[in-house]
Structure formats: structure tokens, C-alpha cells
Image 1: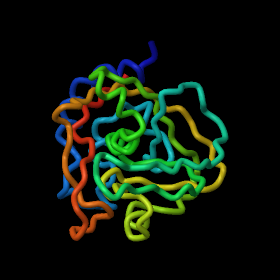
Image 2: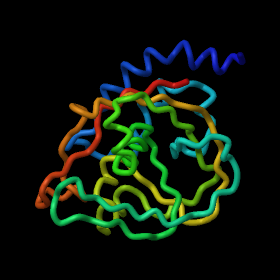
Image 3: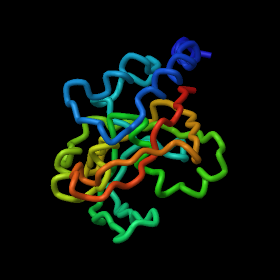
Image 4: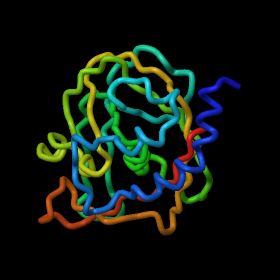
Length: 202
């Protein structure tokens, strides 16, 4: 086992405790200066050497290489009316927060959450990416309901992505939710977002 992996194992218990305290909530404010600062303090060293601390998580491993943006339009229903459909603009979605990555994909894996089982994800990071949309623009343009919460960014050109590690996510599907205002607009009725996931570096 290499030293980086040993470092990760030694830090995993600390990471799990600290990251739980960064629950996404309706009072979350975007702070470009502090972006990712918590994870910079707790993240294993082998995951720090990447492009601007941007991440994408996937159940699939071994996918390092040149990624082409694809249409990933997502429909939000959640029992609320009206429903909302994201634009199908081809893109690679990334976040500067691993917890944000997880919260962003919850609508796609809701059936797995009901089983209340730990989930293992591969973590990918872009190399020299060109960011075309950030959480501010995605919210102001009404593109993504929860971008201000998940800290989502879009990459819209082919980009080299590198697998930088793995995480295990434990989530309480019964109690792990918070309310937020879509597009950070307090005039819009609140919706639910996954919050308080326990993230352990493997």
C-alpha cells in the first residue's frame, strides 16, 4: 500500500466527522474565496493534485481520459408541481464540493437511497478545464434549480478527466434532507435537497 493511501486511511475518520458538519441548507451562501476550503483541510493528499479542486463522481471506475460533453437534462418532480426540466445542453458537470456532487445526482439514484446502503463512487477531476457556467450563472439563468446549493459548474468542451480516488457515501434517506429555494430565489416555493451525507475517503 503506498503512502498516499495510508495517509487517506489515517484521515478517514476525521473526514467523516468534519464533512457531516457541512450539511447543505437553505442558508448556504456562495463564497468563492472559501470554496472547497474545508475539503482542502481534510482531503487525502493523493486527491489534492487536480485542476482547481473540481470533482465529478461516478459509480464507474477506470474512465480516465478525454470526456466529451453530453446531454444530461434532469427532470425534478419530487411530488412538487410544476415539475422542472433542466436544459439538455451538452456538458460535463463538476462541483468544488464532494457533498455537492452527491446532492446533485440524488434525483437520479433515489431508488438506491431507499435501500439505505453505503455507496462507493470514483472521483474524477478535470485537467485544464474551461468553465463556461458557474453556480451564479446557472441560478441566475434559471438553468439548474439547486446549483447554488450543490456548487455546480459546467464544462462544455472535450476535457481530460483523471480518476483521483474513491469515496464511500452514507446517507440517511429518512432524515437527511433540507429545504432550499430554487435558483436562490426566496419568492419560489422551497424544495428538498439531500444534505448531511457522510463522506469517507477510501
